[in-house]
Length: 242
Image (cartoon, rainbow, N blue to C red):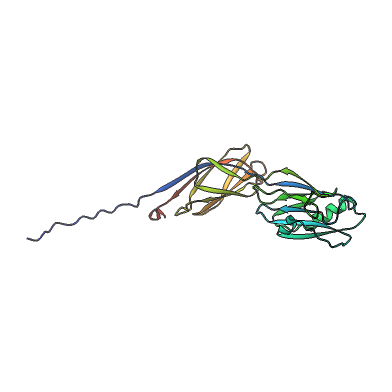
């Protein structure tokens, strides 16, 4: 006898598999240095200084007095990514030398400001740990006539106090790129809580692999450094993606 019983099919709803990240962020800092030059009379042919950007690129700026043309021989000079001549002349003041050197800088992602007193400031455009500028004489046996003072040491932004499974890079004042170790299957929802006074924040970009956070001053709205915490909720289930 034939079995006339009907078969029953059960349809199950897709299971939403959320992943939650919750962590704090501590702001970093851009490195700021002051490089000071002596007068030409107080300098020696081929004195030089090596400056760096946050990416680790380097430029050696060397003094050529009265078109002598003799370059430095120091290993630190030869190792620099770029060697740049700074032409100066007998009788030049410290301000003349500083202005000439400031004008000669070509390294990327460093803002140079001539102080018009023999010194210039070098401020990193990218936040984070950065090698200090170092002065040398021609053969590298001494510091020569140029001096360097670090006003603000570069510091990387950091994450902690929670579950994050991600890395962070501070790309500008108040701008933070958070890259997930394991991308979500859809752009996550992000909640921001300021931990610094007079700061607000927003998600300026959100993707499966990263989010960008912009922190601003509550007064005036300009981007500004600030500590904050994030709550990131995303899906690890493609079936749950609308």
